[in-house]
Length: 520
Image (cartoon, rainbow, N blue to C red; front, side, top):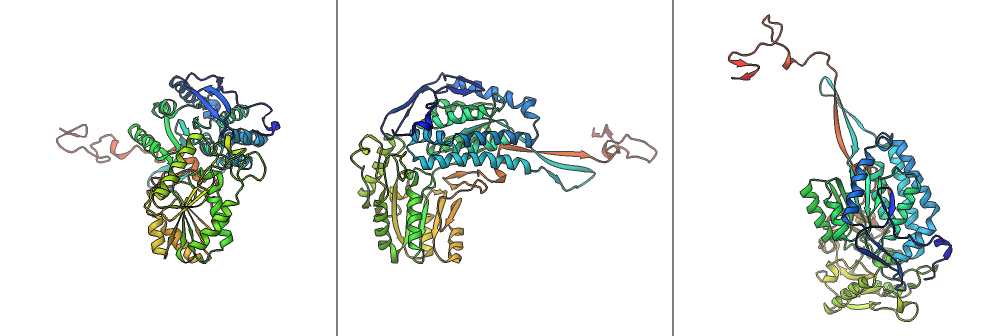
């Protein structure tokens, strides 16, 4: 790989885990990080065992109860988040290089993800400065308040497609809320999380509050979500795993948030700016090699312009630049793993079997540097029905399926004919139509004349099989806290119900046939 050596002067993370403030080797099963650009081995190391999990969670609970963390005022906790952001910004190039080696994403994208993570820590530091408890309206001779307190140890389980950014979206608000956090990154891309552990450690966070526990879902993940001291699970990943986590959380009666899969529709109306729409559709599906939960993987184009639009889109797709993700100007690198490429290729073959026609891509590029890596050309399929597997199942790769539609009702019916409801995009010059359609499409996020833009200040999440709960936004910190109500008695007199019995008419008398106020 041709990663600039300056960005990795210190080498890749050495494979030691941060377990409750201690850097040491895990005692679990061995993990491998493979560079998908050339198949070379980045690092082999031992993941976290259930014993490691128990130590991290137990000591995390102890650490958050220590006065050094428990008694910090909100603005004092915010200082730690700002320090983490400072360290991330100082290491953007290094973080980007590690993530590119781990995932195959371009350096341009991985650097942007690192800067986004820094912004997330700063945002929740700012939220701490303005988040308010509530003095609720009085309804009697008492003063009422609603305050927010940390839940306990938080399990943050993140995917392989956007490390550091996904990590920050869970870790920053959970720490800001006063909790301890155990982070389990995906097995295919664990190295960036270990770098984040080093950053948090360098920022001086009290020992034990943050642990990073790479490992398999079956061993490490299961030990985390079942641990009795874990009081909330925040998960981003596949729907099947999400259902299992929801079952565990329901049985344990703990809150959870699930950001799961998607099969997001992108809609192009005949009045759309075609050049803008083509660029937006390309970015929406093929950036990140299509490995994105919100990828616009179903393209609905108004029938009157469908064929012409798809022809232009296919030509633009053919012009996209694949190659070494460390080289400036490259738009697509390899997929994250060779096994994942096989899965994506099976979907393309299934689409053809279902009557689809490949109008761009559909195969592996050949020749250097492609032969050694997990490359796959960006692919467009047309001619399939919305009920086909390639339209209904999440492929999580650079595969776009196009479908025509006749009118708004037809479009909404097809767009909503999916078990998923994560995101959608609309391209039109008619703002009234954009409003109508955006409100009718069942999705957690709808982009209008843009796509795949994010703001940490705007809540994000899905509907249906795309999960529940929301991340980001001012309220994002509250999902990591519980509400407590406080009542302050303001009446100096004893409560009338319990006033002592006096037979002089000055106080309440007990009814006949009772003893100590209870029916005999």
